[in-house]
Length: 280
Image 1 (cartoon, rainbow, N blue to C red):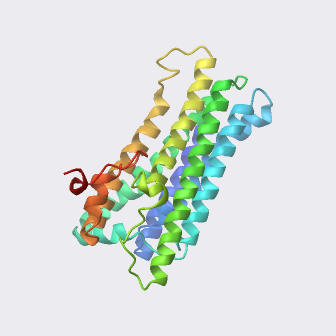
Image 2: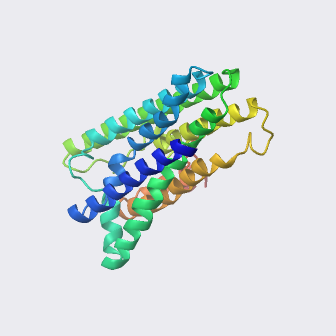
């Protein structure tokens, strides 16, 4: 990546340092959450602007940068309306902090919350760098992957709106509304349809980058499957691990959640299974 890589590493380093110092100064570990939807936009445009300025087969990279910007704008809006930028810490960090000694949590904060997640934010944007490295005219595959990306964006947007509406009704009902969690709409087919949409979007960004490599005569290894796959793979792993932890909290709070888990797919939307009582 040469000088472009140096700019990216400097930018990521500054963001990481800010998140760590801010978490220590404010005793709030949600600073990475606050830059999660913003940093990738800065990274992809860092890759895209030189290619666009050159004017040489820049359409693919431009489309990728716009798609990521759509992703970031939607996520920023949803995070903001939930109070994410007003000093509200993710409740899961408070629970985890209570399960660790202070020094253990600070190590976890530095290595996982700050460093690992900021590195991940760089990794998921590298397919845009790959596309900038192998400029070529867009193809039908690019269009297909972009359409799937937009469909996933709609799924995530609808799921977040349904979840937001449920929690508003729950608040209006005095903090208690059966079954205690969103289980209708898209949540009837997936316990986390918004997570499904989120991951699918980044897999489509990877697929568009891979299309650029394949179009530039790269083979199966290096083209269809290339080093930038590390980003979406690690992102999926992070979401699965985070979901398991989140659901352990939900199951301890809501008696109906165990049955919901048995009937409803965890992430990938699918038709709900019948409960054991109904199938007996």
